[in-house]
Picture 1: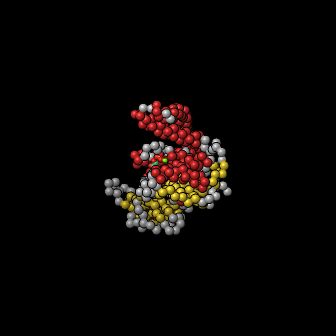
Picture 2 (picture 1 turned 90 degrees about the vertical axis):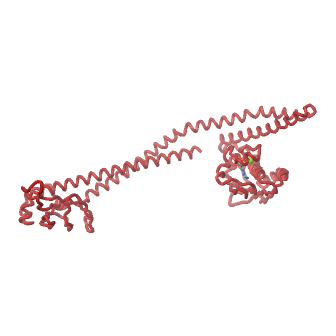
Picture 3 (picture 1 turned 30 degrees about the vertical axis):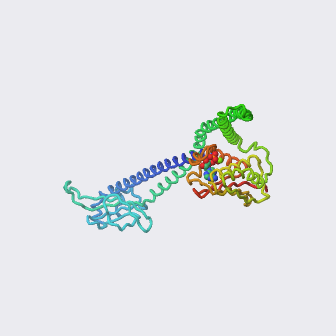
Length: 424
Ligand SMILES: Nc1ncnc2c1ncn2[C@@H]1O[C@H](COP(=O)(O)OP(=O)(O)O)[C@@H](O)[C@H]1O
Ligand SMILES: [Mg+2]
């Protein structure tokens, strides 16, 4: 139970942490990428500006000038294998160019990214306008454009490294967070587990302590009822009510004690474990309950395969099936049918307890095995039930390595199925 809670907490915690980490990672990635691009743009702008002073010469002599002069001002910052410089006239016609990138696109002022089919696939360009010297500063006359370009390969490499770094860092962080989460959930569940344990202990102690006074009351009432002549006729009814209420309370105390003990000892001290022939257990029970069913005008039918035995405790198994059969009879209207089928499937004994009763609403099905849960109808219909019967049946089935499932339809009937491993 707490294992499940712990996992649930851990998974939620990890999910929150993963969301925070990926948000953080995305933020870092976007920020760094933007910065790298800004730096590239700055570099290209500087290059274009350095080349601007030579515009007049390029315009006059064309690329001849570029070949002659090796003392051009951009020489130190220009990498001709990765970058390009181009000079355009005011109409956008190429005057001269230098560098490895052969661009065909027309110049567009400002920073731009060009996508191409051939390599390099992506090029960042920065184009500046060049104005004539001495022109009117309010209405400068355009002389031409200079475009500096560079492949974005370096930027992509930085981005890839960043992605890898963030990915590995994120996975390592998540691993550490899981370790921390394991510790945290352990700490968080500890007090809950402790108080739950105390609660169970309290239930066990309380139901145990209730037993002796109840036994005393029961015995005294029994003695009084054995001497009816001593009782005033007016008190006889009250005495009967006391007897019935006492019986009900002892039943409740026994059930609670049983569940508390099951909680305390998961699989140990199951009592004597011997092979139990299931058909015999069920046959005996059917005989015991027959008068009860006849009273309610309910047909009790059975189909029991012989020679199916399970390892376990006969008293507990009898209790399991008694609880299921009593329910089937309780919650079926007169004229209905209750049927018990014992069969075998692979290495499991299957017991189906079917009825044509009032059924259970679909949303209540997951609740029927909860302690003290009873449908409102059951509460009003029958006094004496405690809502512990199915919880006990389930606990017994689990202790025997089996389980109970239920299918039901309102107004049609219910079927409780018990699966128990047979002796191989
Ligand atoms: N065969 C059944 N048909 C319809 N409802 C059932 C059946 N068995 C159990 N239930 C529902 O499940 C509830 C819990 O059953 P149980 O634990 O045996 O408690 P109790 O019988 O004391 O009320 C019942 O109150 C009833 O509402
Ligand atoms: Mg019951």
